[in-house]
Length: 421
Image (cartoon, rainbow, N blue to C red):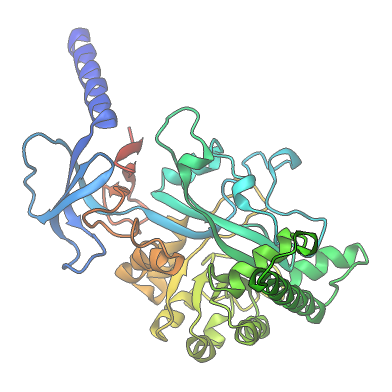
């Protein structure tokens, strides 16, 4: 048996080493297989140099320069990006007190923002961070035809205790979310309130867009007047102002659609109002690949392992993401909303299944990193390990998409947010 003093010494040494890594300002990550998702060849030995939260250098080989705290891993990738989830506004306890993803009072809640419900201390954010997810687009749920405004956030902040939403936000308003399909009509049908059909769901969305167009014109006319009469200033309407964001192309419109006909409706509405369209869920997207490609829409696919629990998910295919990507459609992966504990699907696992069903290793990794960042419009900060970007990095002891592999460490903004014992 190891002598007690030696055990104590080694334990103290481990604590010191962990503390050095946790608080280090200059870190060199040495990878046996480095996947930067940049222009260089992927999967080669390499080193990522981090200083003050940013990537300061990337080079081949396995030699770290002096003056850096060194971390080593078999595989190293950028931090993973979940492109549509309710993490942060839907909590682990799964009770009314921590469920803020759906404002179930009005079919049009365009004025609500995920930002205003986002809980930076939510344990589910810490949970998914341990699986390499460093950035999330958190969006309102699926109940309302016009659901509200999504936001993009990091999963942990600079403070171990007490991070604020402002510290986590990457983009406070990243999209306006619209919902088609079964969920809106089922919820409001039970209340004997519109919408009770798919056609009324689409009509509510169209009516909201038309009202927002008229609202914009009213303000434009008033602002264009040579002498503005304060007594005739239009009244502000937060719903119409939010919808105006997508009409002006300031943020994309995310249409959640599962069935092929709902995907068609989303494309039709986007073309009618000239919206920057992102489709989400797209369970039957593989049936509509040519049309989606022609529309120019991007697709947030998932969850890959969604249950066959309704008519709109009965035709789910594990090859959905692969078929859409092969058709030349920009594809990223998402996990969506789960009503049961533990509440959050893990993007890493969903990507692994997509990789095994046609998307391939690099395809799944791109859909979870750089392609996701490009679709969300945040590739200037995250999605790849390139000089100047946020130092969001994941270290693994094996192939990230192999079930027996582990995430050994996660860095967000250059700080260790998770380290496996």
